[in-house]
Image 1: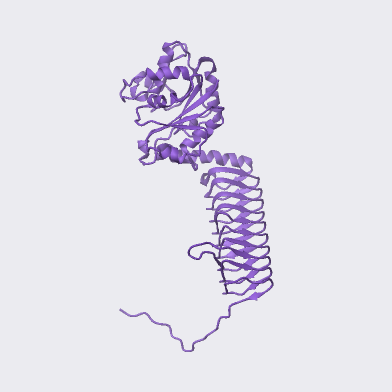
Image 2: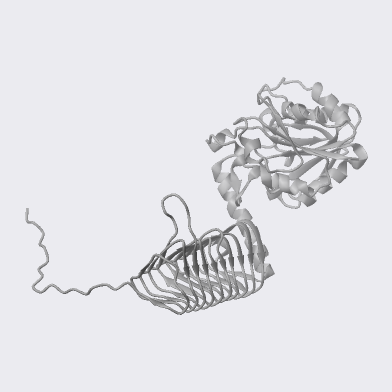
Length: 456
């Protein structure tokens, strides 16, 4: 039997108090909706139909990169039953349909697979859970034999129903041939005037269809996000899960409560990460790497033995073995450092390839450059790569020594073995093994008196 998926993502999320649709708010660097989609992606399904509404095209435009998705608009938000009705017309009648919610980000593939499997015999399965405080959730009402009779929404419960602790998560698997028929029969005769998807339960019962149930491995899997407080609480919970996983892999986190992984990380062993480090995007870190406090690292490959001192920002770069970075260094996109390179405090490197053993330890800007082996770049060196309209390249050879406060006016090429004196402005190419300096006259003014401030 083929599987189709419907993800409901049309709601505004009024309690978020945001112009951004709720499902586009982010958890650990990824939208809530993407979390759900990624879990479902591990299932063998035909197509995912994502129902959007509030915010118009914001949701499909923001997530246009998702594969095997049919975007379905719900122009008026008239309830979950109405939302599913918009998508069911796109689904073949022979399919099973898995219905998910775009604001329940921690649902796992394993739970979804059990939910799909549970529908094999009866054609209808529900994901339910037992929780101590069921307030806000629809209640599962069973008969004396334990079979499901109906689901009662929180706003429609009486005193006895309100005491039930088995709740409906909203997630279910239903045969399309049943679902299509039952959706057409729904009405909105309830306090909210909405078409409840849960009303199909009573229709199944009236036709003698037994409803199977399964439960998640953890209650956190079925927690929805309704406001920014819940989002923040979920963020910390999820970050701790990721932190514990990394520590079990051989990563030392000085304080797991002050670590953020907002993406994916391939980690080696004996990595030491200090507090307030943020890893975004897709990163890989080799063995025996130390990362100091307050670093932000995004889409970076870090080889073995690298030391990154505190307060560095590194993005879309490759850091070779035993490099030493920082403190307070910025490495921008397109930079590739070979082994044993030093990038020191208040140095910015952009779109530059640096060969092994080269050093730039203080207060420099190196952009759009190639730097050879064992070259030393003195404090205050600047590659002047921009002429006001276009960027130009600086090429520096092997074993070059560049003195402090040097300006290299690109495009320019510095040959191997060149020595450039402090305070020099280089405006043309330099042949190998030359000494270059701009003569600066030394003047002394006798009897010099500093100006004094005027008195009021």
